[in-house]
Image (cartoon, rainbow, N blue to C red; front, side, top):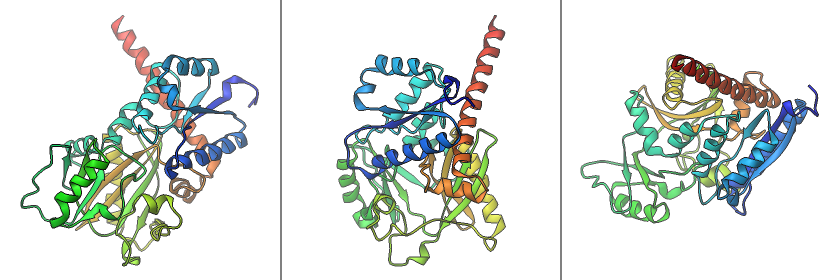
Length: 348
C-alpha cells in the first residue's frame, strides 16, 4: 500500500474526556494498541478524539469527518463516563454520513446498552436468559414469593460499571438494596435470579455467518472465598483480590455437548441482536441449559484483552485481528450499499 494515499487512511475514533474511571482511561491504551497495529499493517492511521463538546456541535464534528475522507473509521468511541448513550449517537452520525466504520451499528449498540431491551429481544427469539425484573424510580416490583439470591446491575451501563460486592443480595435485603441502587442509577436497574456455577464467554468475529474464535471459562469454584461473579474493580483494579480471577480457554476434557450448546446459543444471540464485526457473549450453564447473561458489542480489543487472546488461540495475531475487523467493517458497508442500490432499482 501507498502509506501517503488517503485511500488507506483509517481514523481511530476514541473517547477523550477528563475522568478517573479506569474503563474509560483504558480506551486510550486501546487506541495506542490499534494505532500501532495499523502502522505495522501500513495503513495511514490517524487518531480522532471525540470530546463531550463535539456531540453538542454535531455539524462541526461531521465537518471534521468529511474533511478527513477516510477509508473507514476504526470505532473505539464508547460514549462518556456521564453519558454512555453518546456512543449510539456517534455511530448514528457515521451511518448518516455513509462513512464505513468497524464494529456494530447504532441499532445493536443501543439495544445492547439497554439490558432490558436485550433480554426482551433474546426472549422473543427463544434464547434462555435468567429470570429478571426491571426496577425504575417509583416503579419497584413486589418480588413477592420469589426466592433469591438475586443479582442487581444497572440497566444502561457497560464495562461492569455499578457491579460490586453488594450486587448479589439475599431475599431479606433485596428491597433495600434495590432502592439504594436506584439512587445511584436512576435510569433503572435489572434484578435477576443469580445463576451459580461456571461462567463462559465466546469471542466472535465477523458478519453473519460469524467466526467463533474461542470459548473461555471462569470456574469460580477455584476461588471459594471470592465473589462468584466479576465486578467493576475485578476488571480494572489490579489491587482488587478478584482481579486475578481469569477466564481460560476450554480444554479437551470439557464436555463436547455443552461446548456445542454454548457456541450455538452465542451465535443465536448475536443474530438476534444484529451483531457485526466483533462481539462477545457471556453465558452460564445450569442443569444442561445455557443462559445468556450479556452481549457485549465492540468489547475491549486491547493487545492484552480477552478477545485478542481468544483470537490468538486461532493463530490470529493482534495486527491480524485488527485488519480482520477493518475488513468486516468494509464488507458490512458494501453489503449495505448494494442493498440500498437494489432497493432503488426496485422503486424505479
